[in-house]
Amino acid sequence: MTEALAVTRVTHSCHLIEIGGLMVLTDPWFSEKAFYHPGEPIAFRPEDLPHLDAVVISHEHYDHCDLDAFQRYPDKDVPMIVAGPVVEKARKAGFTNVTPLEAWEATRVGDLTFHAAPGEHGVHEVTYVIAGGGRSVYFAGDTLLTPELRTLTDRFGPLDLTLLPVNGLHIRVAGNKQVVMNAEEAAELTAVLRPKLAIPQHYAFTAGPIGDRFILKSDRDPTIYVEAARRLVPEVPVRVIAPGERVVIPV
Image (cartoon, rainbow, N blue to C red; front, side, top):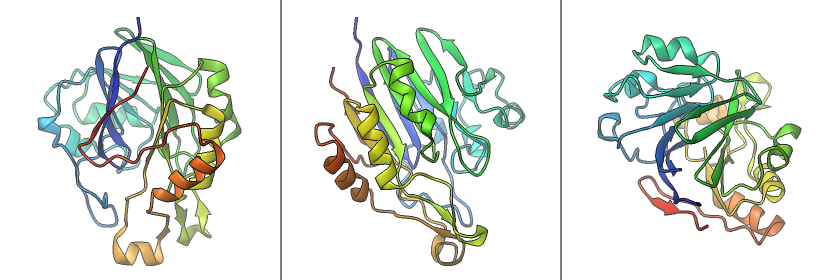
C-alpha cells in the first residue's frame, strides 16, 4: 500500500519528512552564530517539534548538526542515523540511540529503511535515500555532485522527492574551492533522478556581510535552480517552499 508523503521546511537543509507513517528530521539547525546565519526564519524550536521517529545527519558542520540547540528536544532516545564523525557529538549531547552509516550501508527504523549514499564536501559526509510505505526520498545534505549519485535510481528505484543543495558554495580563502553543488549541477542530477517533485535546499545561508565578502561565495537565489531544472527536465515539477510550509507529494 502506498502511504502519504509530505515535507515541511524548517530552514536551510533541515526538514520534517512524513514518510511511511513516521516523522523524520534532517540535518538539525535551530540557532545561529557569527558567520552562520540561515538567511531565513527557523520555523520551529527544538522543544516545539512534533514527535520524531528518526533523525538523519549528513555531516558535522554546525549548520547541519546543531546538537547544542537540538538537545532541547525532549526524547534523547530518538533514533539518530548519522555520518561516522557525528556519533561522538550526538552522544555527548545526550542522545543514546545513535547509528553511524557509511556509503551504501543501510539500517531500519520501524518500516523505514535508511540507505546511506556517497557525499563529497569539505568534511566527511553521507547522503540518504529514505524509503518506506511505498515512497522514497533522496536527501542530499550539501554534497557536491559526484558520479555515484547518478546511480541512485538504478540502486534504489524511482524517487518521489529529491531535496538537493543548490547554492554552489565556494570557500574564498581556500583558493575559491567549491564544496557544494551549484544550481546547474543540481538540475543535471534532477534530470537523471527524475523524481515526482524536486525541492531545492541550502540556498538562503549567509555568513554575514564580512563573511560573504571575504570568506564564502554562493548563489542565494533558488530560482536559478528552478529555471535550470525546467530547462533540462521540464516534466519534473520543481517547487521552492518557505520555512514552515508543508507540501504533500502526489502518488
